[in-house]
Image 1 (spheres, one colour):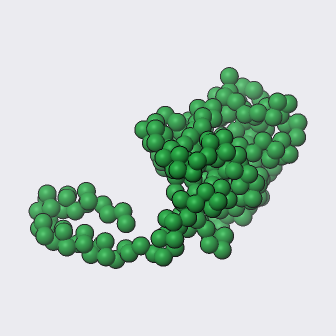
Image 2 (cartoon, one colour):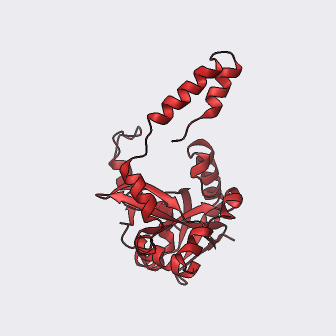
Image 3 (cartoon, one colour):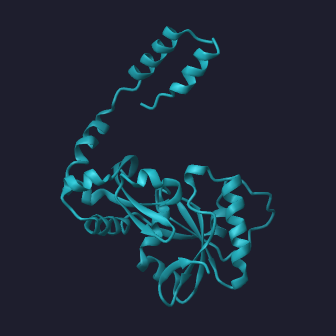
Length: 246
């Protein structure tokens, strides 16, 4: 269990709790969080490459903010982001937990980074990725956002997976993007680690406006640990590639 020792230290320092009272509470917390059977079994599975290759998935994270942890994880650069890899544990389609793949784990498996990346990309194909029309998302919200009429065609699309967890990795599937985009170019806005927003390129001067929008949403809505970046990206339909905006 994750036990917040700072909480108990502050209580002790302020004289609100005695030392032994803090210790007894920590012991009680530990006893109340015994390891569930599924977690013990999962701990055994993560050492089995045959299991791992069917349950490894890519996750996109900001490089700058994760430099220290990236020193120990298997990672691959992607623009100004990094791809890391997690092993997912699920039951009846429900996400139970995950483990990040470290360089030591990769060495234990005896596989290359390229093999790991290949299986991760293969697995996202079965992860239920889809583009959702922003208009339909707003219509189906349990509140109206103050709109008396149905929202007009917005031309904005959200890319995520069925679980809506770490769905930003969907942009690594070039075939998915090509099938959706056709001949249309898009600006891609990093909503969070879990999704992207695609906006058709109509006005090339819109980049500055969109960058500002991303920064404001990050600052006001998205938790710091869930952010990808403070700027938008560009999808070139002709080349079927994503790149940094000029």
